[in-house]
Image 1: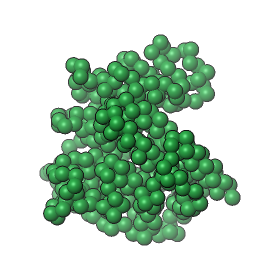
Image 2: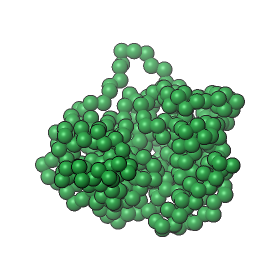
Image 3: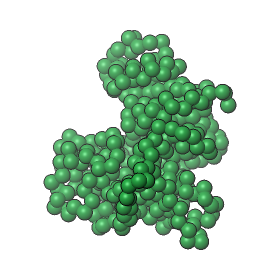
Image 4: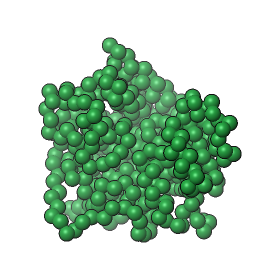
Length: 382
């Protein structure tokens, strides 16, 4: 390892990416070697001016591609450069924070190259969990989750041995609509759905949190990260977002990880593991009274969670189909093309229709992804 550890942040202009850069400002042992952004070119320029990375990748829109000659010599334009940055031999840690299926290829490239992969892109494990974990085992790559729930499981699991884990308990805030009826959900607007009570996140993950499909995806993610069976994974609604998740061991002991709802904490732990150092994350205020509720999911929430358990049971291309269908459905909701209440039923219908491939290669995963997107678009237009 060099004196300073080189870090690449893929998706540096998003919520996770900007938090990662906030952490890196405080930790002198790390150097920001490379960043990437999609369409927020001005923020990407600002980040490049501040950190002077060796590598800046723009994956974005047609204007970015048209203006490629106006960027500096260390700027690369085009999605193909993401994989090159993720596998660059000068990089030791890759923070994978590109949202959705778009972040899959670069996550696979980092795992194949033996990097420490600080993984915020849950879709990489949902779509290609078997492939990603197999590549990591072969190359010696470290998969360390940045999702607050899976980081909590990772940390709590250190209290025992993996075979001693009886079950894990993922916590969910319940989003802004916990307890609403089906009729009330029909009336949810985009503005209300984007107003998360605890977390400041991007639009896609905020909507997923409101539907609880983010938790369905996290069920699949947990299966691959921790080698668990579906019946070893439980979800409880925790409106305060202070208990980030828990591990129950064979002897009945339950170990939880608590903290303020601040993504800088799991990001920093993924960078510094196994060490803990001071950093910019918000601290708990122990001078106040805290109420920590844990509530079983209601019937509406359970219907969304069941999609995650079904993907775990099916395996194969099921994760690619659910993820793609959800991406299209969320985009349609944000454009007011479908109602909030239709997102989960639409995803269930597409998942039920698909023809499972049990041991897919990468091309077959992409075929399943494209099929699900096409079918969801047909569903929306019908």
